[in-house]
Length: 161
Image (cartoon, rainbow, N blue to C red; front, side, top):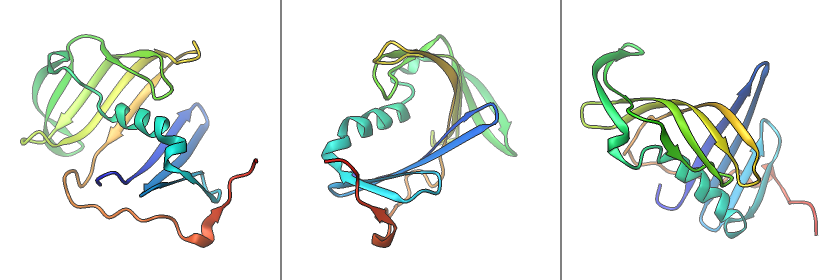
């Protein structure tokens, strides 16, 4: 919503689900892990991380990387199905390079995204190799959104000095 954003990010591994939230309102960013208390920081202090996360939402930059499969049922809805025509490159939010080895994109008739799911391999900015599955679900796409900062009583001052 403009420059403000709210994200719920879930990382899963066998037997583990790690959820984190990020809310950015104005010049302040708020984050928390699971049900822990919110921590705030100036937006500028986490600007690179925010930019990396937003870049991850732009999964396909070149339409030639996709091949149209057709109209198919997806979770009880008739949607247009596209798949990766080739390995689709992407940049991990931590830097480095990666690619989607498989990619499924589901969109409505007007192109509104519903779901993007892909299996990826990557090397982050520190040289660490990784692989996994990424799934992005869209709802209320293009509708007005009001993003609010967490309540003041839920905030914890960052430690350090």
